[in-house]
Amino acid sequence: MANIPDDLLYTTEHEYVRFTPDGLAVVGITDYAQGELGDIVYVELPKIGTTLGAHDVFGTVEAVKAVSELFTPVAGEAVAVNERLDKEPSLINTDPYGDGWMIRIRPTASGAQARQGLISPTEYAAHVGA
Amino acid sequence: MLEAGASGDGAGNMALDHALLRHAAATGEAVLRVYRWRRPTISFGRHQPARDVYDRERLAAAGLDVVRRPTGGRAVVHDRELTYSVVAPLCPDVDRAIRVRDLYGSINGLLVRALRRLGVPAALAAGAQRSSNRGPTAVGPTATPCFDIATEGEVVALGRKLVGSAQWREGHAVLQHGSILIDDDQHRLTAVTRAPTCPEPVATLRNLLGRAPEVSEITAALVRTLGESLPVGTRLSPLDPAREPLPELEILRAHYADERWTWGR
Image (cartoon, rainbow over all chains, first blue to last red; front, side, top):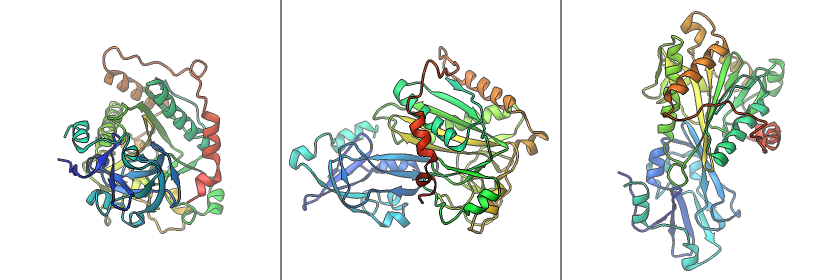
């Protein structure tokens, strides 16, 4: 059973977003997605400072047999990337919502506008049939 | 749809696979393509380090071209083999970035049935295994040759890897391509790499059948098996480039011929 934390927002592309008190959006892929992809062996992330539009491809993730695109859930600037994933991509499998986070975005918009297009935990659970 | 094309060069082969992927996304049509390589070519995995691992002078001396695939995984020598590719549309929202194993299993299952039709004792690997029991498995995009390790769901025969495959998912479509070994050329990687490698023995159609089947024979088995696997009412027809042009083919060819793509990492 995939873990879908209540305090996050999601995309139908299987990214999650955690809005933090400092106004940033922490982005990664969901527990469901990592389970479907299998063992993750490589992650390609953007450079810090990259401007990302909503739905832009912000990177790629390579599982043992497949490379998939990663999509930007919140438009803004990438202000941090998880450099640990360079050496330890399996953190995405073991702790997708914690040490397996991918990028931190400073959203261009604020408030409800930044959350546009994101879905609730309940909606995401329905989306993946959980 | 079916595209059984002539041999192309490395950039041309990768560009056509990628253009067909975009064709699948745009039209909703799936395509099986079977092809060979004009010259012996090493393909690197999308994220595989190459610049500090492969010696370009030795590659030239060995008569080996190089190209970097859109798909992941590790290096493959394409010479005495047959390459297949399958592109298929994905349902928006539902299928993208997931169900890798389902699709992988379906395509590899088709390969197994086609190979069995030829008399090859092909099967799907139960889990990650080296071709011989020689140390731990490594599954990342490393310098390790592709055919050294068979991961779960890959096509093996008598415990050794026979087909190496990988996927690339872009937009609303997926590409899976792979190499079916007729003879073993994978040891040629040893001569051109700076990394210490000792390739594992692989399975080949020649060893398994006692002869090297004609490419047309393998292709016919694939097409017949595919035809039997399709839902009733599904039409299998040749891809007609005149009727269905691939507008991005030349742009993609330039991309795959670009040294920055091939040797950028």
